[in-house]
Image 1 (cartoon, rainbow, N blue to C red):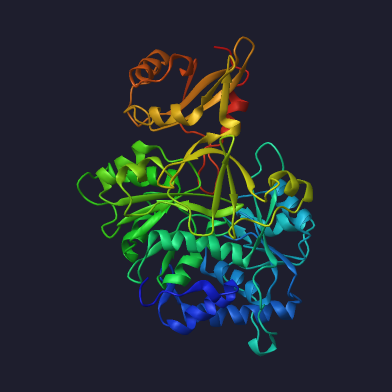
Image 2 (image 1 turned 180 degrees about the vertical axis):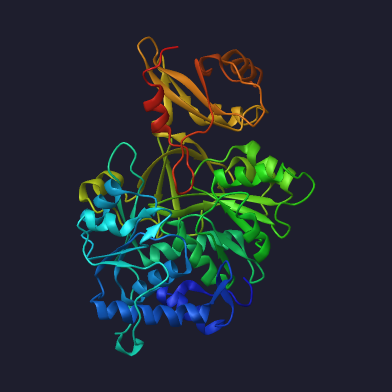
Length: 502
């Protein structure tokens, strides 16, 4: 720890953590966005004024407030103001529309709903009215304001449910995931202590602040006293100017972010795409080993990848001092207090960072085993050194003629092919085999289109067993991805290709 790092052992709430940091380093910057800067002291002071404005509107401890806002300084201010009051927050990803937003508002029973007005050409205020939302107010660049002297004492404990996050709905409605301040602090501290930042670092939040990664990252900033650049809209190469101007040293988000940075680096080999960058870090989606090696080799930076989910914001994280092979092939180790159990190949979790369940009690009952471990649906194993290796998803196991096939194993091999930019392997219904193996690939610009025969010959040369070879190949311009961490949406691929016969 640096001399400005905080001991979180007695921090009860997120507001408590902010107050301690503001006392310790009030003038240090914490949030940077374009030409604007907010220090830790300013963040606390302004959040208290916003809290007072919300209090005047009728928001109290326990009031459910949903917000659907982009990644802005104002969004962090509103969130900390709600934390100051002890309200229950329900963040909603800003790209969601009527179906997902309406579901979140109904299920959370939100009494207030903060929206950005018209953002990126879409009228969120009109959608809120269309959905019959209660207490709608716009919170883009103007926030409620009041006199902090009206405020009651901040919440004294951090174990009550004060956060409702939403899993991304794919073939069914999203799930409302219940978190406490302490579970979010536990998740963020895992990230912070694994990466070991210093107050000389500059981080970045290029993903939606409404994602579970928002508080995860903020906890790290509060613990170690360094700033992060906020990107309201993230796209490369457009965002590179912001990274360079603010001297970002730590960037990332997920596997797709690493690939995007690598693509930009390949446009100017030998010249660092962000001169100050020393570390890429993230999680949220599997990381092919070849991508790790390519980033380190071509970008000249370290890459540490972790494992987390909405239900458990940070489970494991790679250590920058780990051996390259461990960083390439594992998700890192769990922090103290996170128990990992492998049951029939499935990863199960117990610890303070684990959510308290779901809004739906039946979903909660199904998600936890008799010993209180969360069933993740992920497949994996623990090495002798305690590192976690993810081998796939339960639903991604392809059963072909009674034999189990790991989609991830094939994907990792395909990522090593020079004519493959990204790949997803899925199982498709097949009357003869039960399921057949289908590989869907993106190719680099200018690459000659791959054939199925070329792909299977390559995989056989790489040592893949014959019964695992793809029987179908689809080449696409772009794999379908989610709007948050850019995960590949395999369910859309299954929908697209299930009716095809090869």
